[in-house]
Amino acid sequence: MAIQQHYLRILKRQVQGHLQEQMEPEAYQALLADIGPVLETPSSERDAIAQILQGIWKATNDECFGISPDPVPRGTWALTCDYMSDGETLKMALDRGQRISSFLPPVCHRLTVSREGQRIFLGIGTYVGPDDPEHFLTEFYTMLWHRFLSWCIDTPLPLIEVHFAHQQSEREHDPRSLFDCPVLYGQDSSCMVFSSHLLDCAIERSPAELQSFLKESPAHIVDIFNDRVSLRSRIRAEIHNAIELNGRVPSLEDLCQELELSPRKLRTRLAQLGTDYSRIKDEYLRNHVADLLRDPRYSIDEVVAQSGYCDSASLTRACKRWFGMPPARYRAEL
Image: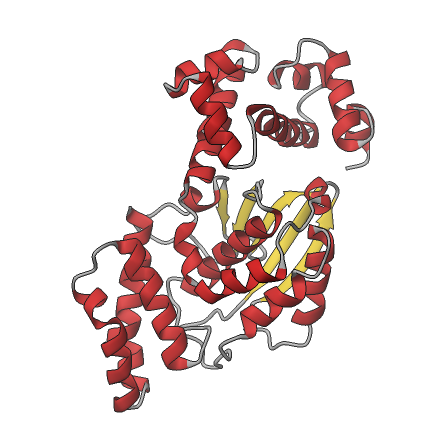
């Protein structure tokens, strides 16, 4: 996978270049003893990235991997996660994240939350400078926070967009595969954008589960490519295509035909992931309708047509269930 190759190359260059120059010889040799085999002949890119990430954190005691001029002590991210996970909902967790972030230096993965209408902008602060020309830290911590928040609510956090303040560079990988949403460069700030209704999602994880999660961090960054995300993405893509081509949401049978799965097998796989087709369909339509209503070019009738509903009454019932108000009022309050 191109993006894993990209990050593996950055980490190798950091180990064999900057860290070799900056670390004491004895400490550097200890690092090589820990991760040397995967630098030379990795059995898999995923395992190599996980081992190198953990090895650098341990050897440098720096959660910026020796890239930032100001080290971030190992354990800072875990402390923030631990404090956030005591919140009962995603909103409470993010409020707690902002609170603890305010006591940390700017390079310490500082979180900021702002709102514009029905959109939440979650900013991720970290080091930006000449020692990180490919903006590895910004992209890495954006992915890591998305992974952590998704884990907290026990479902991938659906994003509307991801914004990066830096310009897109010439490279082989496409970050959209990590976030399953549009990625915009050259923006005012780096942040994740998601719908405000997700703030009500409950935090599903126990303290014991959190400790297990943090024990493996930051290796979880390479676990984003799992069946839960990919299957959901395929289903959302099929819903999108069916609405565009046929003007309606596909039935379970039509979906299974496109996915080349039997209805029973699809139900089983989704049940193992803690979801079902109705929930994924509802989640997709809610976000899709919200995006259409934000765009003044579309009349309410056009929103009906482009979201697969048979009439405006059906759309109104759905909007009242999702947003607590009819579509025209929702648009007016944006």
